[in-house]
Structure formats: C-alpha cells, structure tokens
Length: 332
Ligand code: 13P
Image (cartoon, rainbow, N blue to C red):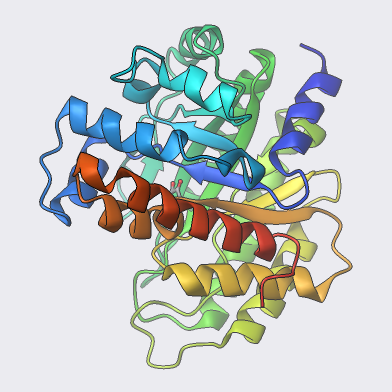
C-alpha cells in the first residue's frame, strides 16, 4: 500500500456530502443503548440491528464509511451475507475500532489512557484481511480540577501516534480521535483551551512518529459548553470557536475532520456542522463520524422489532441525509 492509496481512501471517506457512521460500540456500550429500548443485548440482536443500518437503501449516497466493532466485522447476517459484504455492496467502506478501551491512568485518579498497542500489528493484519480499509482509536480527556493533566495529554497523544503509524504500515487509514468530553459544568472557554492543547500535542506526536497526514483523518470533539454549564453557547459561537481552534492546530495536509457527536442531541450536532461549513474558507473537509447523533432515532424507531425494519431505516436515512447536507453547509 502506497501513501497515495492511503490518501485516496482518506479522501473517499470525506467525499463531498459524505460522512461516517460510527457503529463501533463495544459490548458494554451497545448494551446501554439496547437497555434504552428494553432489548436484550444478544449477539443476534446486535447483528440484526447493525444489519438494518447497513442495508438501508441509498445510505451509500450519504455515508462513506462505517466503523465496526471486532464482533461485527466477523458477523454474517441472517440472509447468509457477511456484514462487511453488505457495506461493500452499498458502496460504504468498512472500518474498525482497534483500541482496547480507555483504562485508568496510573497516579491520576479520574483520568484514562487508551490501551491496545501490544499485539496491534497482528490485529491490524487480521482486520485488513477481513476487509477493513480504515481504523479508529479514541483517546479520552476530561475537563475538571487540574484535568486534563500533562500526563494524560502526552500519554494519549503518544498512543494515538503509535497507533496511527502502525495502521498506515498495515495499509489502513487511521482516524485519530482525541475526545475532550462534554461532561461537567465547564465553560466553552475551558473547552476551547483544552481542545487546543490536546490537538497541538496530538499533531506534535504524529510528526514525531512520521505519520503521513495526507493518509489520515481527525475525529475531534466540537468546542462546546460543558453539558452542565449554566451558560450554553449558541450554534454560531460553537461553529466559530471550533473552526478557530482547528485552524490553529490541524495541518492543512489533513484531508478531513470528521466530528464525533459526543452526546449532543441529533439536531444540534447537525446544525453545528452546517454552521461550520457555512463559514467557508476551510483547508480541510469538515464532516461527521457520528454514533449517537446518527443512531438515536433509528434505534428508537426499530426497537428490536423485525416489523419496524423499514421505519428504522427511514429514520437512519433521514439523519444521514441531514448530516450530508450539513457536510456541505446546505442544511439550514
Ligand atoms: P458519538 O458520536 O456518539 O460520540 O460516537 C462517536 C464515536 O465513535 C465515539 O468514539
């Protein structure tokens, strides 16, 4: 795999009006989602739910790629077709989450470092054979008293960069995901300051590990007010601050930035992305790699009932279409 091929895949993932479906919930996380619709998290239910999303007619017009969890990339749907094949025939590029989760950071209560570097080279080879063409690794940062610490920022940036280099070696595009959580009562100022520091450290480490920026994507949080902050910044302010923060830290060689939704409600996540693209004059594509903001509506519409398949798919397509418009600044 040449770096030009990696760049081709990265560019395809942020093709005009397209973004990514993050469907890589780990088993405990998908259980939480299923609990909300009173569905048992069995292997069969997880498979059928993801099959519903991946088989949505016309989804490939708006969705460029889907990030899978280890179980899903190995699963075969009830009709005998692998879920990877379903994505491929819809024109959706299969991707895979390769980190092993955020684990407590020694000596830093309340903070985490994401693990999964040991044995990663072999796992990446396996995933490439299973059809993955891109990957994701998420580092997590909380805002709070003396948080994030320098230890948390440097340890996660280092791991993200080592992961990205290994992914590229295996011919897989790395999506680098440093997520500053929206939990807490911090202000949007705090979020902007922390996000800027985090992104600067990530791009510093990517340079040290000689990661090809052209063959990578960034998946950051937006710069928003903490969930419990009494003052919530409006859409225009979120858009301006997020773009300012990215322009200060993300090299223009990166083909695209695909945001996580992070617990924002669906509609706001779409409006924020739309407002950013309306600002124009951006050196990279700005699109989405949403989990909850794409799935909350279809999950509820489906509710684990085969009879609701079409309703679930319609709800998914509606969110995909709205975010596709936002990715070109033509939503509102
Ligand atoms: P959310 O959009 O629900 O934050 O999920 C995106 C994701 O992949 C988190 O790692």
